[in-house]
Length: 360
Image (cartoon, rainbow, N blue to C red; front, side, top):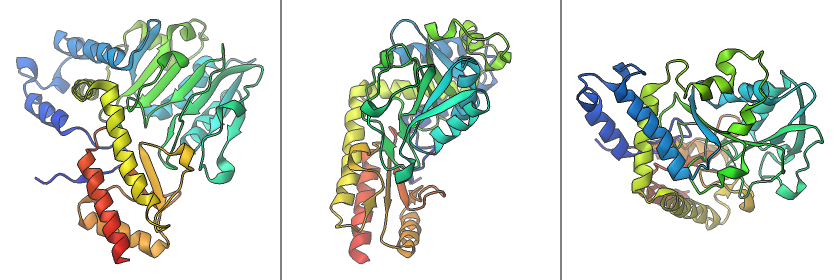
């Protein structure tokens, strides 16, 4: 089988080593006579998977004491509601920085549950840049400040993170979690759908400061209360066991790549290859994001005409490339180069882009 050049934005590429190992263990997990997805989530076999995933994530990410790691369901979209449910009290204001579609969606859900304020936005430029951290001034009664660390649709990414003292900083890191070193202590809560860098769809990782959980209102539905999941080690209800298992295999793979340092170096090399191709194309390819806000995960660009864009996407599919069409809301093209996308795929894309330009 010839593997596709997978540039899908999510669900996205998984490491081939992970897929092979999951295949080997699929029918008879640890000589249990059952597939992992058939095992009870209370069994000792699954418990070992669950605990290893938590401990490995803490180790790789350098998560300090005083934080909980939770495995939840509902994707990042459910977190848009859970965050204001738990932390947006009647006398407080949820502060949001708008940098794209997903931050807009997070704000929309919070507006249904309490007071909100947009403290900065790059909407007027079609989200081409990340606002300067120096320009971010929270409201006096801020419950938290919410940011989206990487914007899949527009191809922008925070290069540094703001600090607000005692005001909790919350980040949706769905599309760049585990792609580079991060000082977790800067954040009170990080959340991410797994289906881009961590594993398959179905599990959402939440890294939350324990101090943030002390004063959650008691009238929140049980399943939407972070305390419920923290007290029950993410086993209050049946977790997405197979997704967590594959996530654990991905963490093993990250270790084998040299941890976050190795992953970050590889991601920089991949992004540099494609951005250099764009920058040296004499305007044939134009990046959407401003240079100082470029994403290392989602590279967005346009061609001179809509006709050429359609031709580019059509011919790329014939060459085995998948997922290069831009999001339907903005058009153009997008190459999502998450952790598991091999550098060989990026080299092949650059060759195709250069050939296409030469022929058109």
